Length: 410
Image (cartoon, rainbow, N blue to C red; front, side, top):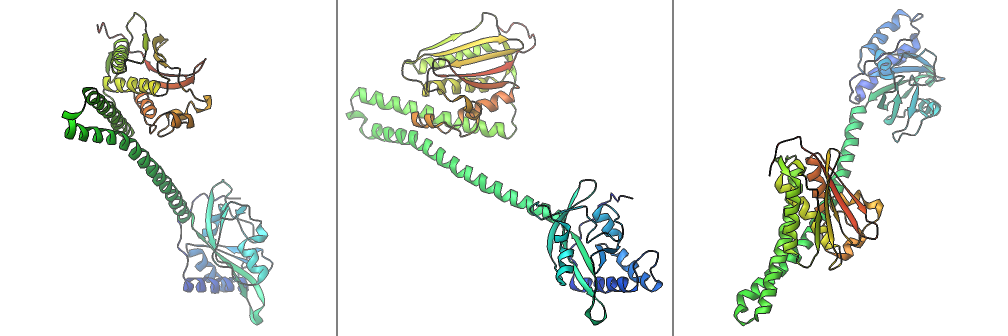
């Protein structure tokens, strides 16, 4: 059996006048003889007409057995059925939702059984090579003299591309609705998180402007401290959002050789100066560990890790920072004795806007700091992870490839 592999181009639905011409030709083929061997010369022009049109057409007798099909139908089915097969040349049929369709429930079978046209029903046919084609069928019973049922003709219109476009539009609409929901949630989170520090800064600044001379020195210092603290918090939120946007748009970091020992030590010392009540320790090897990294991104990465540990740890609890070389990697660990997390949440912690329920109760935040860390590390070709810590708390860590020997960077 020869298998036709060429796929016909999708055809528009035939007009009423085209269907009438096809039905008249099909009736003549049935009445005058449709067998390729026994076809009468009178039937040949009608057969040639049906073969010449670019839409799949086939006919059956009154019992639903195929009596004729044109070349477009053979291409549509991906096979050339034997004359006498029942109802349809497709090997497998299914409803639009993917449910298998028995051949005796196909549009042609219904049209013959109920002796009425069943135009416009959609189905899917599977070809012998496994490819699938969506189509709309136009089966119509044909009658001879005295309205005797002599057979039927079916026109199959390929709507695969139209179906693909419709499905894509449905998926796009669903994705857009999801995107809008995420955007609304994001705007709500950002608005809340920005409002709190801005309100503090605005209120204290107004008070200092209008009544600075009448306020006690201790109160002025406290208000200025609040302004500085909330300004830093506000700056951190904005920097993380900007960095998340830049990395998401494909902006690459400016990589240069960095002595990771020095970079981590600088970040720890700077953090400790800003948080004098938080014990922070650092342990690292004496030998220099050099990586290719963007210094600004590296500092922001450490700041996010340390700020996260501070935010979710009880007052006075120590934060431990450790650096080591393991094989071809430089690994940095930030350990705390804070709220910890369920081990199953280890991956989700680095998703944008994700926060555990315990974290939401503990402190404000929008859940972008760790997402930024993940993007930064991925842009550097490294890896990042989190683990619950024995005895309570968390360990957040990242690893970067150790750079080839670049000499002493001092």
